[in-house]
Image 1: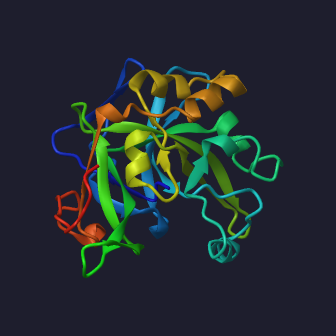
Image 2: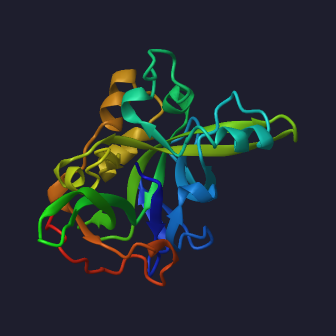
Amino acid sequence: MCYYNGCKVSRAEYIRLMGIEKEIKNLRLNRPAQSGFDYQDWPIIKPIYNSTDFIIKNVHWEYIPETIYNVDQLRAAREEFTWLNAKSENLFVNESGRISMYREGANKGRCLALSSYFFEWRHVPLIGKRGQPLKATQAIPYCITLKKPGEFFYMAGVSREWENTAMQQSADTFAIVTTAANELMEVIHNKKKRMPTILTDELAEAWLQDKLSKDDIMQIASYQYNPDEMTAWPVQKNFVHALDPTAQFEYENLPAL
């Protein structure tokens, strides 16, 4: 799943989408590597209701359901549940066949998470003393991004406003939508074989449109980005704390992608 993300700003000062240009200089977008399990905010694009315009804002990365009423309950729930990602297949109906907690976000809270690259782990066999592959594996982190020029791309997201009833406060929250892995991500994320739903500019605009049918939402949410337009390389295992988390790292006996 997509639990580690990065945004790296060098020259870009604007986001352009839907024929609109927005300034982004004051949005704290330079985030070399961030773990979703830090439960901090992340920059997303949200449509403005009854308008063709949009806003860019930092929103809490964790889709908090309506069954959570206070921070203590939220912290306890994190021991059992993770709401950083939302499976595209379960946006409306969960795996038990019941109404999904993400349905509200899919219907009324579709958003775009900004990203420059993300990280996933590839499980590769350890090599024995005689050079033979063992059953045991090691997890090698990879940095994945797009080949197209530009500093940002868009991941589909779903958001909702969470009400902390104990504090009488509310906050926007969101999750990144994931889909089945494409050919490249099947090799990298070879344990769960998932990937974030990365959208083309055209699909990103469509995802924000107010009146989308359930079938349209499901179709866009399950989109698999062209693997030929993606690139990936191994990084050091403690990449989150590295000065440059995207720096390529060499591992012995690592099979090629």
